[in-house]
Amino acid sequence: QVQLQQWGAGLLKPSETLSLTCAVYGGSLSGYYWSWIRQPPGKGLEWIGEINDGGSTDYNPSLKSRVTISLDTSKNQFSLDLSSVTAADTAVYYCARVTRVLEWVTPFDYWGQGTLVTVSS
Amino acid sequence: DIVMTQSPDSLAVSLGERATINCKSSQSVLHTSNNKNYLAWYQQKPGQPPKLLIYWASTRESGVPDRFSGSGSGTDFTLTISSLQAEDVAVYYCHQYYSGVWTFGQGTKVEVK
Image 1: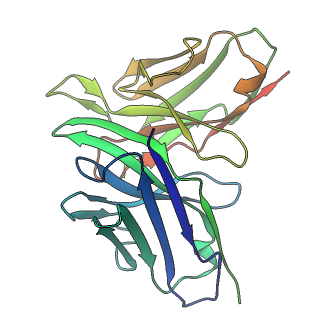
Image 2: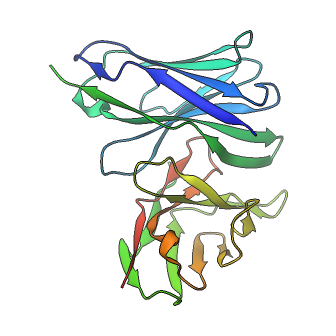
């Protein structure tokens, strides 16, 4: 059974960099796309970006200038960095898996438990 | 970006009754090459991540009870819970994975009347 376990700092000051890591257990990074999604408190879901097993990335243009998603295949992990955070970046951040083979896609079938990141001075 | 609009924002249904949630996309999410609608539904309970219920607009994820069904094509979609159970109380989101920027509806809160 695939499990995604995520961790990272939960309290940041404005202008700092948010860093989260998601480890994949019971499965491989290979053959899948790995995403980050966030949800401000009491609000809806926003796709941040994704990385495939080859390291190719795609980001939401609204965040692209501040986002980096990376892969560590040796540890079966992937990570999110979001720079220059503000209060507007306060949210629960989730990692999730996507299965994609050409045009055949199964979206977000496995999710991490979520990490609340609060940005406050 | 494709805008996903759900209706209603919330609904209260008696146990055992039908619950219907609508989702409209600002442009078609039907991929003509494979005739698939790139539309999914998720269930989110408090303090939990979303759970994939349905993809390709009408394909139930493994393990999802058959009281959950999805329908629709192009820009208009529906999630139906045929007989509401207490454990179905949650927020439901539609999601398009057709375009480069994947987007979600604003969510519909389902409660017991």
